[in-house]
Amino acid sequence: MRSVSAAATSSYQVALAGEFEPAFHAIFAELGIHDVSTASVFLLPVPEERGIPEIAAMLQKRGLQILDIRRVVHHTSPRPPTSSSAPGDDAFPSSRKRGARNSGA
Image 1 (cartoon, rainbow, N blue to C red):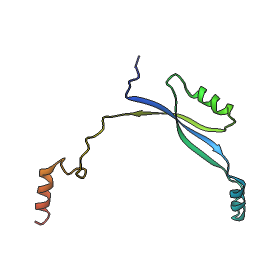
Image 2 (spheres, rainbow, N blue to C red):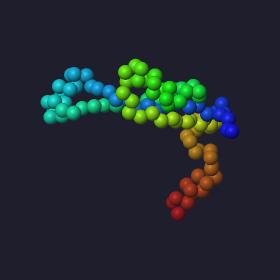
Image 3 (cartoon, rainbow, N blue to C red):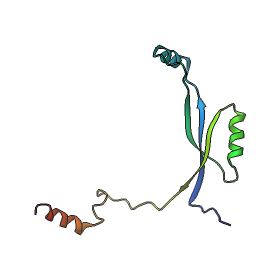
Image 4 (cartoon, one colour):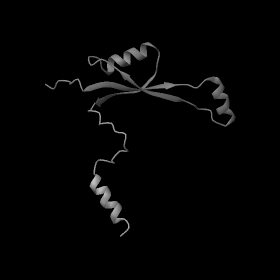
């Protein structure tokens, strides 16, 4: 059995159906658009013991129309060292100097 490490956190990407306000419907009608809908997509952090059925029940209880729910796993990695120089300046200093000399040849 695989254990979840502290370096992995999970959340769920949730897409909900929405609707524009009446003012927007009037603008769309002037443009000849009569069937208008929208969706909102966001990340919802959820404790590990909860899953899609619990998320769906929570959202439906609030009267929201669910279009999609999917689990997203983020793997954290150590932060790269910070430097005041531009990225790559000190990664390969000798090759950078060679390239500068060879560019005029």
